[in-house]
Length: 219
Image (cartoon, rainbow, N blue to C red; front, side, top):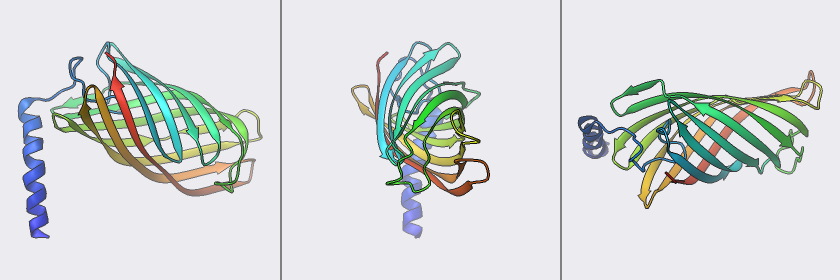
């Protein structure tokens, strides 16, 4: 155990010290980050990304606009056979050395088939989605950003009586620059999910999201 601690110290401390000493920060000339990192794209920067995982796959577009970022994305939940289209904004509120922090807020539309082959409690419907969240990034090297992720999506039914779904997910990830404008993301989240198909028929269970993504900075 002592040898393991010494090895981790030898690897991590120089990288963190390098990030702090050199004042690493994202700029329009810095290609690192396109899937989740940086927590907010600099003005004029554009990125495209896609990811696969469980329970969903997705694609998205990010655009830095002045002091905030806009993102549009589509997601397909292959556990539920449901799809969503979402638009959200993200604003950096803290930058301290290699650390960045940005809350986000968005809206979306969910079309759920109600298939139960992977999810016995699934229900069909059209729902509006509200998307509060938070992203933290800590740059440990020129090509590596550690991420903290919080997502709190709320789905409210438009077609059913009192349909709703809420998730509280938290987790971590890492985004690594591969070269040639490409960045690789690996991330996982755990939490709780509560939902009901109709009034008085609520359920609570474990919620999770695991994904591996690839993105590119266009500008």
